[in-house]
Length: 297
Image (cartoon, rainbow, N blue to C red; front, side):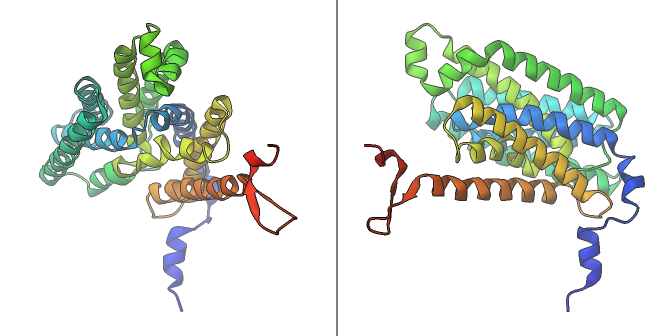
């Protein structure tokens, strides 16, 4: 028989109401992160940049752990690491091959630097572990203010560059030929991505940022090709994953990240199955299946 104590660590709803009242900051931060992450996720997938997200998260982790070591503001350290990494990738990686090479160099450097800082840190082990896997109760009022301010900057930036960025992400050659500043937009987006990753690290930890900044749009793109619908579904999936993960992890001794990533994966799996079924229709003539696009031809 399985140890019931293990299951109680994973799912425990005792005193749930009292605990729920203690994490209103985390719920608000999770909802805002889902909104921002879902929007940014659309462009991450359009521009084929999940690998870059992981690289930025490693430098964000290094910045946060460095700030933790010297007693500085962890959010500021995380933001600094993320933005620096995003600028390096954006400015030096104009081509896909260059970008991947730079990312391959930055990832181990950032992770190694972060591990070094945490090894030197003599404070609470929960602080170190939380940078990697997230902390449900870590969002106090000052940190929430930082997150809300950062999200406002990202949302404003996306509102300004949305249309030209979407054009440049879909067809960069044509966009450049029509006078769209593709290189400048790429740099702006990398900064916005860096800010979003830094926000995500504060909630789900550095190791699992992809579940917030990549998976939502990847799931949405499995069931629709409409850009507005992809964006809307991406936001819904991201908010559902983060807020749902917080609600499920409440009261347990498990970090928030496994819950968020599990919900995010299940959403993606469901969308992939639904998308696969939509691409085929039953053919009564021979009992087989044919692509939907061929039905009306």
